[in-house]
Length: 293
Image 1: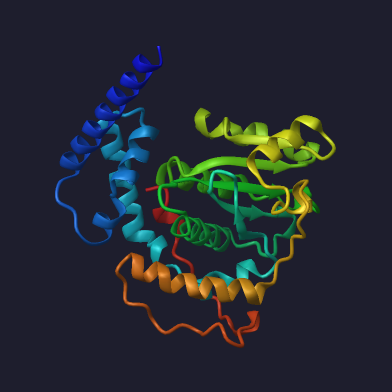
Image 2: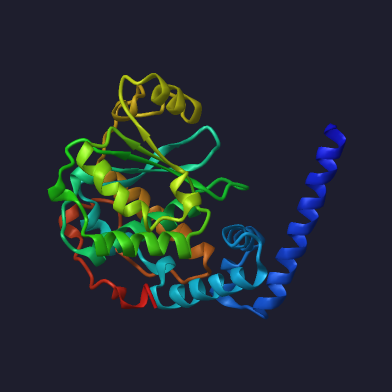
């Protein structure tokens, strides 16, 4: 019984490898950023997102390459988006989940700007940062979303929400491993029904609503996180503190790592030593007109 199962798995792996090879051939010769981006692992994610249909995966990845050539997410640097992160509304956690996935912490109640483009560009920067910090062999990340202090006044316009979903689903397929929405108010739950309409069913299955003092929620969080690392805001034992200057220093260091990964010549940006939020001058964000093209 186990032998047949293993043989079947090997057959699946062999078929998947064949599909990856076919997708490579279909894409044709690549160079520069496109060559780095289209790793075997990346091609597998796009194939998985399109149920291993080579032609559909090809079209999807071509659209992503087109978007990346215009939006240039890998070239966004922290000094461009730091003003969006002053409150810590989105940040990369210092810990990983039990599967070794990078964790992004989101606190929509700490929204500090009204710029749709600014918010999206900030999120895209942190998605790229989370990816560059994934351990070898891991392709996905986890999201922890804390609704403390959230109200309808913090709710993003539907168009912004749709733009974010479009980017995530079409240009970062299979990057989200799981997302925990911790203690969302009833108003949000009602609004989520409208948002869910735009989510791919597989993505929607990764969204988990969890609540304090709830046995099922507690068990779910313990199964995915070490409670010593998990902040109290999510039912853990750790203290969640966001220090914008410390986080900025980390991001400056990661910007150098990002530039090296993509083979870019790193420019001389403001140094982290003595950095303060007031030192950052916001730069014009790339227009979102190209996002849904």
